[in-house]
Image 1: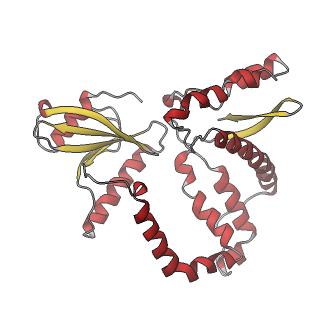
Image 2: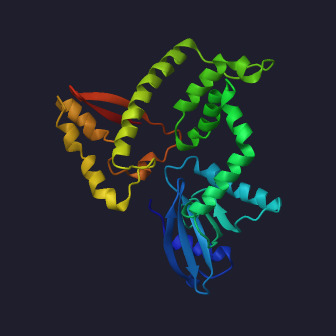
Image 3: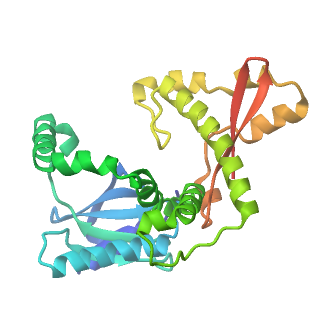
Length: 293
């Protein structure tokens, strides 16, 4: 992701009524699921965090505006939240990208505090045990869970799982709602057949894809531990898959759609991005998962 470094520094300084000349350092802080974060330090040792969404985050306008609105709402409810210094929900600014400037708060990661995690888990089990075990006995539990889980997926460019869950909801609408409420979604028979057919392929492809990732400890977002990086690169080299290709067209397809290639983020900036998976057999006993847009 490219952006004008001077731009964020200038906007950050101005957001706290200081001169851009007072910015002495901008360093990368962390990478989250939707944003890269940077730590900006001023001459008087004042620090703030700049959150810049990835190009693939979509729609960026609502992602930034929604986060800002949430912070303001929580603050109006007198909850302790980060101070907001400035933001832009579009790229028409000196930084040439959407951004949020918030307070930098020192602390620790809860994931590093095993004892605290155990206490939280113990409290949850003892206080919610009855409800926790009662929920799965509801015959609509799985469908409700899928609807809730996949309702956020379109923000990541994926709509298939939500579409499948909505189709299941229309078929079992009365049992899901208790009746008396008209279903707001309609699905034609052909669309249902095609979606179910694609789902069968998707489930098989996801199984192989997850199996490959687990073999080298590859995370959901494609990350791998530094010490495992070289092994992961070697494992996912194209040459092994290409060795079983039977034709030039098959080789070209594998080369052009290899899931673990270096990615140009700018290529994926459009809204409505979705991935599909399919299996290609390249030898008698070998399948390759092909992922395409």
